[in-house]
Length: 289
Length: 289
Image 1: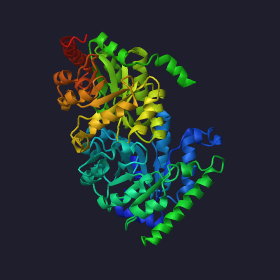
Image 2: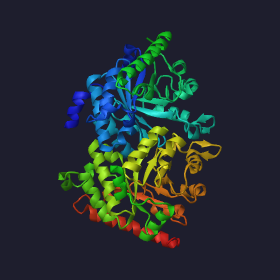
Image 3: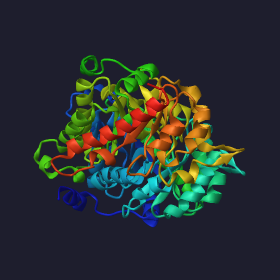
């Protein structure tokens, strides 16, 4: 009952592929702001409020929403505060959905388990908390991913090629010329569609986007690793953009912790505007908008 | 401060490989009880209590602890109730640690992310909530796993070969005769030791345990899938036991939801006793105890 009421209030509409493209075209941006809101890095003066993490996020969101098409709270940074962290996370999603309903919100949770368990994670993030999407790890295969895809109007963002050093350990495991991450892209395409499935492809390997676009020409790609992790936006745009944009580029620390004074939100807004500006240039050059 | 106090009270000791073996020998058991405590399946009369999931778990734990060497709450079944679910989860771990401190408690969470994020998950489960271990997905490689291994005295249970149908999609991806799950076992061994790393190997593929024991002869293996998922305990024992036992066999639904009346805990105790009895037989036959 409470959930239905919340759904009616906050989860007004779900977004398909063309609506996601429309929101990018409208904002001339494909920026996703990562809300890795670590308590220790939040300006001191907010620590006296009842919910410092939410107060921080609220200010970041108010300052950056004009330039961003998506937000991506990193669930670990909430979960590490237990029940209190979950309240901050829930309040953050609600705040975005209530005030900026056209913005796509991704739970960066990297979940994935046997079917009946993934179903519970889907319930947690996509139904109860009204996220639009959740990041999912592919290791356990189809029945660990599909329960998330079954939630009407919601999205899976499946890990393909990640931006960290450890990606080399297994993601390049090569069977007859097919690397594991390529197999993930090829096989998982059959589980969903371009309307409910996108992929994580790390920006630190931007040149790989060329090959990846051969396998998934039309899917949206969520690209982390620009900024703090060293990826180049120009390279990502060069190899990753398709005719419907097809990208969501994430920046977390480079925006939200760009300044640690009371002006943090203003500076975050400036950083987001700079990225949006650069994105607009690439979108125009390619005549996508 | 609060955390230190809690650690002092509840997390009295951590367990290494030989202590884990000692607890198995003492109880003549290698049973892990999975606390997949789905609210809809909990007897009606508990729904009127303040925390039905915790009340259910408490009764299950009191009835089964004589036969079990480990408990494994499945985090999804708590997370789907948001902050409230986290309170039930925390209360459950605390209850076990306070009343049965020699029992090993695993957060079945299947986490894994870039280093700074895995560190936060490690903090959530292994420090703040005092779990002894957490299940981790290997897809993102070493730097996604090692932050969990760095927590002194705690364990990673790394996914190798899972018990679900989707395991076929990627885990058998074969490079020069080495399957992906074998590569996971081989490479990850270097990240930890038999004192802080064990592996998930699904019981529905018990015959595979023979090959797996060639790669990891000494590590503990956590084996889910006995019971509801169709795995055979006899087969698992045959191929999986080593001279120090080396196994933790999990049963969830087959124990905790064996009966839905007010006698559910008594029946759960009986089911756990049956499994312990069978395990004792295998341990004796192999002269492990």
